[in-house]
Length: 216
Image (cartoon, rainbow, N blue to C red; front, top):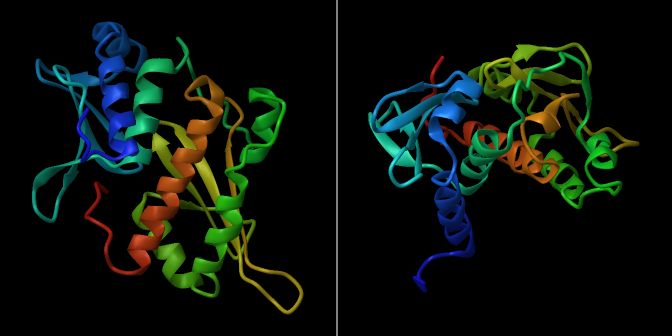
């Protein structure tokens, strides 16, 4: 074991190895992916990604540098879940529920990731125009509920809804994510929190001017 690797890198490596145990032609057919001899290709959160068919590694394309970069933990783990564990014939329902409400479907308990939303909401407070612009750069389409609300495409027709309310004299800033009712056909419940954590990271990077170019 490489002592210089973080636990996150070790987990990514394990998932890459696990991906290689799956029949890739079945994965390609199930998700209607584009592929060649070297890679599987998909668009995830408006970024171009590719999955190495020989070592299982995942990369995204940085249009600023025109270089393929290694995926981070949350986006990589979400993509592995989509590739390996999505159900045959999975389809979005087009109906949306609070992400936390899927917990009862998954395990009967509330997942601790709920605290992510409470902490991160403060970082978007009273930056409505900038947050809205960041959502649009992720391919978001405006929704009605909230001071800022956008439906953000994750993969193909699978979307999540980002909702944000600014703080006022009575209430703190509030951040919500709604997901498709069939989300658990595409990924595990815990992985959905990896997904929203990655979306929050991308939005925060956009606010500070550090978001890489995306596919529009």
